[in-house]
Amino acid sequence: MPAAPAQTSMPTDKLLYTAKVHTTGGRERGSARSSDGHLDVKLSVPGGPGTGTNPEQLLAAGWSACYESAISLLAHQAKVALPAGFAIDTEIDLNNGSDGYFLRARLNVSLPGLDPAVARKLVDDAHGVCPYSKAMHGNIDVTTTLV
Image (cartoon, rainbow, N blue to C red; front, side, top):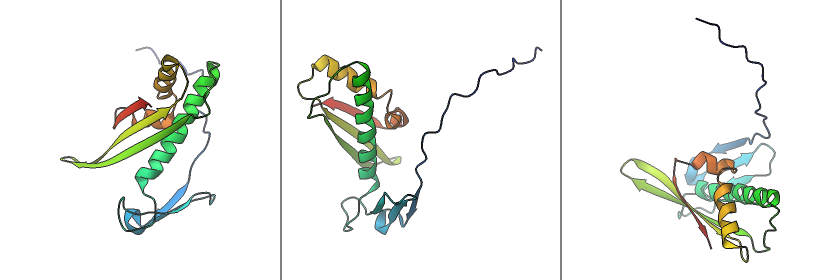
């Protein structure tokens, strides 16, 4: 049996950033604080009596920020000017089914005044660029709508 060819190329992965967050208490009366102190939040159950945020809101904020940046990058590469009213309203549903808890998501993208075909291409292609979209692909139901 011939020997496997020697690997001659270096890995292309490059670590860009590591988020470090310390969480205690879970959803009920928890807190989460990043190692740099930029994130310092109280956690509460969705719709519960607490005053904190919840993991679904944090996911919605992180995903929509990442997804918006992916659209902006693609628009820049295509030399498309994004409108001033460009925004994303993200909804994350926490559900309970026969197999336990699961998530669903809706990304409602507003690109007012942009040609609908151009807007649709940016919105669709951004899922292949955004790391959050890549992580969610095939794992949760995601609906992306131009509004």
